[in-house]
Length: 357
Image (cartoon, rainbow, N blue to C red; front, top):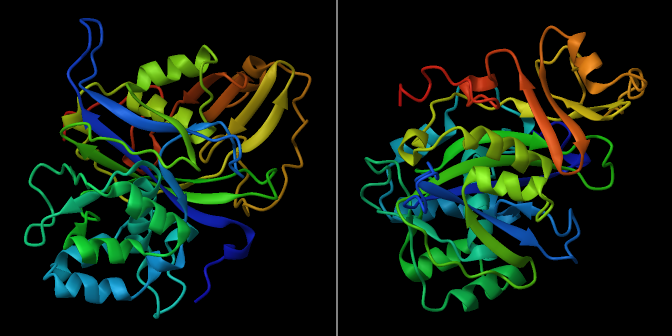
């Protein structure tokens, strides 16, 4: 089976890596930091932007060789099957193209793990006999020859599976949590990505080894501090990053994120409307989001409200799920309904969600 729309964009996976950290000051409530990096200026997509580690899906991620790899290491079939059986909304990226390929719910996790290692040297591994940890935290393995392996995988002279075979390790697909799924808006016709985002939590910050071709610099910081640096124009966060960091910014305790219970992922493909004082991007559930959107068409109503302010347009809607942009560095988030997929609320109205973890 060929996944619908596969020819229109490239699939990718990203990893939100959170690590426990003691608050640096009395006013800093967070006990964790988030790992992000700045892309180099010669990057083909969104150069100089600050993003989570991640990148394009590769055929090695879908190789059935992973099935024998896990089997040879006595990895539980039950644990692997649990990863592939997900209830709730399933965007097209999770559809497996054929029986000769690994289940997408597993291969996308491998993609996210591979990219995190290739870009930043973060190698998340798990115990063969105890794949799912009791705490839900991942472990990062420090390699003495990390640069050599990064180069080999980046150049395609070695595979991610070969790395784990050489090390005798198992990639930690089990302690990753499906977080969200984003699709680049239709206006970016030449370069669109459908990206599955996963969350990994660590008990300590690992050493980082930035890959020089893709990484200009990296940061460990709290969600609020990263958003503030974005507003102060010290960095520029890509739109999915601002949304996801805003969701995280209302959660101060890393243990409450292991995991935030949800089922499935609704595809988030922003649709633009111009306003007199900025730009609005609406998301599924908003009154302005087209019913049965095909993910390919331009918005015929792009300038329908162009003479009105963002506030005036907002007041006409009953259901809100949108991001209002004053400019590239200043956004406001609005959601006046239950978050999709029982997720964190982008305005922090999480009710009993975190208390139930």
